[in-house]
Length: 403
Image (cartoon, rainbow, N blue to C red; front, top):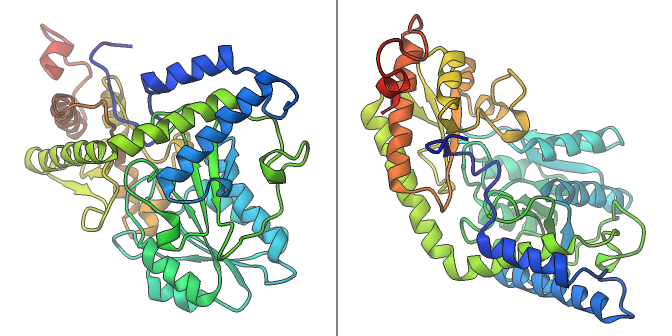
């Protein structure tokens, strides 16, 4: 990788922090016992490490530690919540589930899966700013509605749904509120108890932790939410998620939570400064820029932008040689279809096709962002001069174009 290559795909995944890696390495070499093996010291030590991580994550969220269930990631947490509640409540409550058209595919495809088993699914439209219409949500709830599944921060645009209002509506109507908080975790404060969220999916690798570990928050009291587990076996996680614990990854997840407790305000301030620098620079330096969702509350680390009148293929090929970015969510990078999120917001197919997602993290500097702006400016210039070869001919090659 080139030394000057800039990573701007933090919504896809993040680098593991050094202190997180250190505690994971220690777990691999010192706490390598099976947490379920309580008859010897190494198993007990591993179990203590898992419970310490559970406590730290619960403390960050303001919930009880027995309400945190470790999973292999947010996708498993999402499947567990939706499929588990469908199986648990279809005979005693109903089979109706509500979500919105801009959800992550992990939610939408899970809903399609239970639909094949008899669930009824209502997918709500969103307003032009990307947020759900709360009155439309209230109107869609029926007596047999089991769950409302609406994310906190959108993974493509960063748009924040009004979870407090959604939580209040769900409380009044007596339905479960499940929230995918994968992108929000560690970026903005989110207390599920205070916002009325009953179930919430989390992932470590979006917030400087390891891949392959996540968690499901499930309210254990007032109200106590029931679900049928997806995995059966040794009865780990209180019988709610069987399988040997991935102790090093869980320990790393716990270290992420501890770091967030002390650094979250500093991180938020830094991310907001990066977002301001990027978006003000885009508007000042490049004509025909549209920043999607910019007129509503958003996550501080995501900018989704379209550039008018560009050759999209040439633009992305040019930019990708110097910058890591996404053309949508990381799960959809191999499709040529425009973003389902932007289309649901009423963005034209042409503008949605030209959109790129730039997402940034704590290691990114203001100087990095200034270089990103230069790269974007030059790539747009090239993409609007469709007959200009890349790299530019003449002395200096890349130096002429990018420096």
